[in-house]
Image 1 (cartoon, one colour):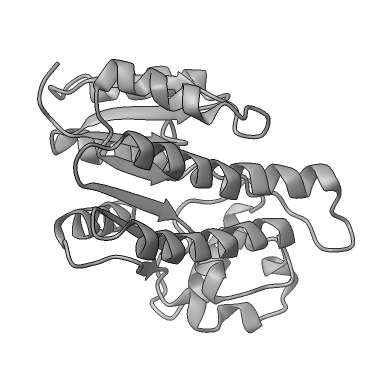
Image 2 (cartoon, helix red, strand yellow):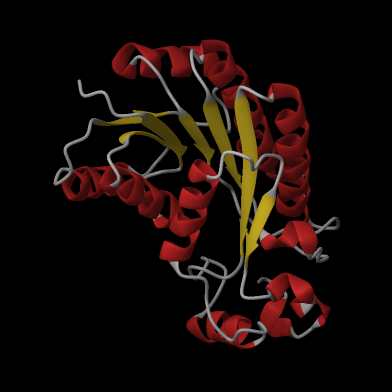
Length: 252
């Protein structure tokens, strides 16, 4: 195995997670990813990432039900020896409100979006030998509360608080930061027109590009004085777009 540093990216087989995995691999990071049901996406990523001279391994682990986080981490340490960067990217994003939600929906959001990052951070810290870095992928919603996607919003706001709390507790050995993206990729809840309309309501009138999120990852990695911070990359969406009550936006 080469001497490159290793990054664990949860939800790393597709969308933003895949983009980060390819970007870090291009920059000579070994890559471990967690996935749940994205086996075909894992195979595609494995093919694409094979052009880089790095080690790549994918681990199937269901954050909604599986609680054995220590065993999950031990498997990676046996394979890689060290995890230097933890990117908590895996997320559930299902529509609900206080009136229509149920216990399963709420628990699923908390388990994936908060419990998993919490316990992955715990075992990342436990096994870390040298300096390390945790990056939590949040959402511009933490600065732009809406009455929709209630369980999702609660879980991401809690993850923001965890980011800042861990930054204090784990300093100076481990830095902890977050990234809050705005409209980047069309969600399963949107039509094409709704996604375009969402972008048109941002001050910069543009979607967030995947490479911009990757640039933020690079900045956090390289700027050693940054901890406890959340970089909002949202074309200005969090400055007030949510004030609109148009039905086009009721499901983001």
